[in-house]
Structure formats: C-alpha cells, structure tokens
Length: 80
Image (cartoon, rainbow, N blue to C red; front, side):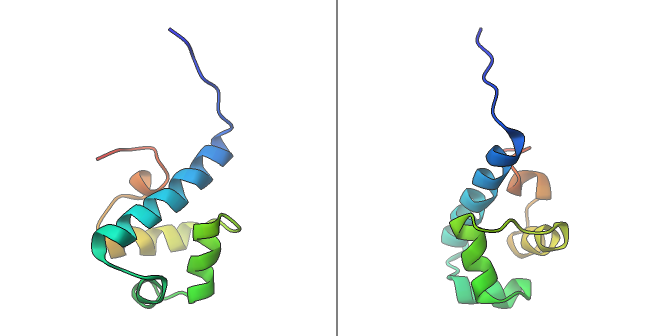
C-alpha cells in the first residue's frame, strides 16, 4: 500500500475550481449566471476558475447554497 502526499492547499484549490466547473455544467450556469446567484462579480468567478484566487469561507457558503451541496464537497473532503 503506497501513501501519496499532496500539499493540502494545492489539492484544495484544484478541487474547488474543478468542483465549481463541474457544478456549473450540471446546473447549466455560465460565469455571469453563477455570479448573479452567488452575489459576486463575474471576474471573481473567473479568478476562481482559473486558480488565481480561492473563494473565501463566505463565498464557499454561498456557492454551496447555489448548488445545494456541502462545503466539504466543494473543497474535496467529501464525494457524492
């Protein structure tokens, strides 16, 4: 059995942006629509998706509510 060590911050960032992209596709949201639903600017969504920024805890709560998922799912601590 091998154990793979991944820097947690890198893993979280990658999962957050991937999960947002996945959920946007599932819900049929573009960046503008998600920004409207989450109450943030479209350029903020763009920065999250490109990995330039990470959502704050408040933004994660808003995203979780928009997509009806747990924050743990967004950050990769839980799979559905």
